[in-house]
Amino acid sequence: MRRLRVTVGAAALLLALPLSVAAGVPALGAPSPAGSAATDTAAAAPGTAAAGDPAAVRIELPRPTGPYAVGREILHLVDRDRPDPWVPSAGPRQLMVSMYYPAHAGTGGPAPYMTAGAARAMLDFRLPGNTVPTEVLAGVRTWSATGARPQGGHYPLVVLSPGFVDARTAVTGLAEDLASRGYVVALVDHTYENTGTTFPDGRTLPCVLCDRPKDWGQVDESRAKDVSFVIDRLTSRSHPAWRLARMIDRDRIGMAGHSAGGAATVPALLTDDRIRAGVNLDGTMDVLVPATGIGGKPFLMIGHPLGGGAEDESWETSWSRLDGWKRWLTVEGTDHHSFTDFPVLVDGLGLPPAPGTTIASGRAVDLTRRYVGAFFDLQLKGIEQPLLDGPNAADPEVLFHP
Image 1 (tube, rainbow, N blue to C red):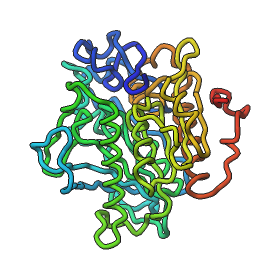
Image 2: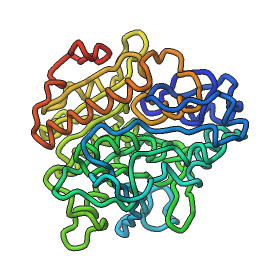
Image 3: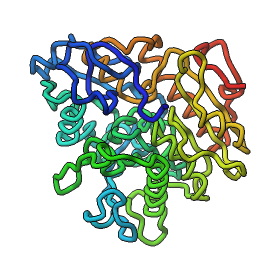
Image 4: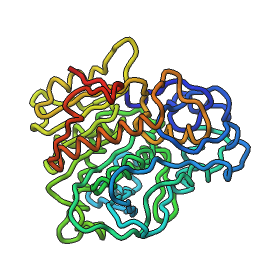
């Protein structure tokens, strides 16, 4: 239900279309399926991008809320002990990972949102025949800096996994905010599972798995293996893959993900004892929490409301089996992609939000960041978080499951 669930909206960007309709999407400005809500950004007229004037469109991610500036570095990791699960002929599993970390302000240079190759692949996949300039997407303003001087100290590590079809950049805003609050964040691209992953040799690999029949449980379990491998390489005491690995507190590791990335938190928590806490943002749990629980590990579920008061059966089943600290939050007025960057892009192009999405875009971003940040502050830093104790008048959109 939540893996690729989208609502129908006007005008459409690229970002939240179900695969079954992607091939029939008209150009920007015509009615078609679309994404939903997220943040305050510079607006542009719906026809601006289609007119081919990228200078007129300047999209910004929301400013991080924490006390630290944010640095970013890109890693290319190769798992020589595991063949690629989707394209065995490609050899060992290879991943691209964006590392975000607390940094000193005023150091480093602007970090681009995504490569031109990945941006073009996303546009072409979502809107065949579209006229949105690549620069509009590749040039989205971020708040992180490449080559930024790191802060001293040790910080909890949070591994982030995006939704299926989505490049890792889809949750850049959340990654930057967590880093600004004092976390190291590893944002993982799951190769061949998204519209395009660009590697250091310049190749942008396509979404091979998109057009195949899928065992979603197998996808989630494969992602859990990706995550464990990334943790292996980041926490290796002898030869860590990241030059700033000393910043990571190996005893405080969490995972969060959107959609399929959120679903993958369950097998990751079950198979990797180093991951202490998990967050599922609107992802159907194809691998259910077993009757024996997940070892008492804390778990946060945040989702959008379904029609007629229905609930995702996988969430209902898994909720009853969670055996540690747990919260299930439903955010009224949101849709599946409200917990990602996608609505920022919709707003930035001046396009209307999806019908049924009533929450203001900036409000959706704020709530996602605050509740996810509060969860990790509580579970990985031991800081009490009254925000998570129950409903509060300041956030009437946030409903706590009984």
